[in-house]
Structure formats: structure tokens, C-alpha cells
Length: 136
Image (cartoon, rainbow, N blue to C red; front, side):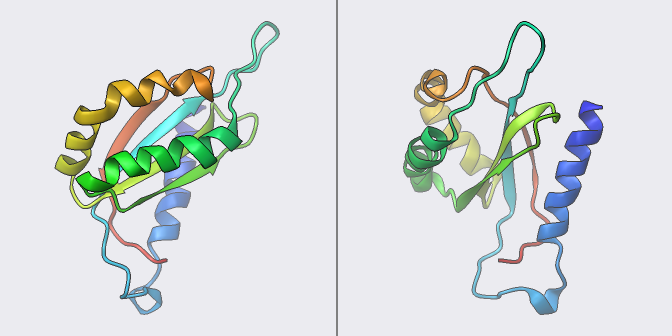
């Protein structure tokens, strides 16, 4: 079930980025690589995950962007999922290369992870991949 939900999310994201070449805005530089951070969503009889979207979207991610931009970060997207999905939030970080992300993460991972309890009861996991096509 979790794999199917993740596969659906990745397919939906790929669909957004896979518009025809005619529809592409050539003023947007191509983005070649992404990292995806996703936060578990647990709801059962004894425990409910928490996530403060206001803090995350208004403070955490702009701060992360300010740290990662000097390493080549192009931007990010924050995506929420429905309550029965295994994850509550999925964020895509866009870079030209994996090496840029690796350098940014190496420089700032500890300080970024130290702030997770300010907005989430769960620590993120991540996937990486290539962006094949973009349309903005």
C-alpha cells in the first residue's frame, strides 16, 4: 500500500513535469536533479503524528532555501497528502546536479535536522532522482 501511494505521487509529479515541448516555458532553466523529503503520517488508536504546516512553509523551508541556495538550489515545492496516505508532506528540492545537493546537505544537515521537532513529530526520509522535463 505504501509503495502504491508513493508510486502514485511520483507518477503525478512526473505528469506535471512531462508536458509537451510546445507548452514549455523556455525562460525557465532546466532543473536536472531533485531530492524528495517525506514525513510519515501515523494515525492509530494510541498515536497521532503532528505537522505544523505554517511553521514549515513560512519559516523552515525559506530558511533551508537560504542555506542551500549558495550551493545551487533552484527552488522547492511543498506537497500535502490526504489523511490516509502513509506520508503527510512531501517536499521536492531542485538542483542542477546531485553533487550540489550533497554539498548543501553535508554543510547543513545537522542544523536542519535539529529543527525538525519545531514542526514535526516525525523525522523525514528521502528519495533522490532526475528531473526529466519541466514546465512552469
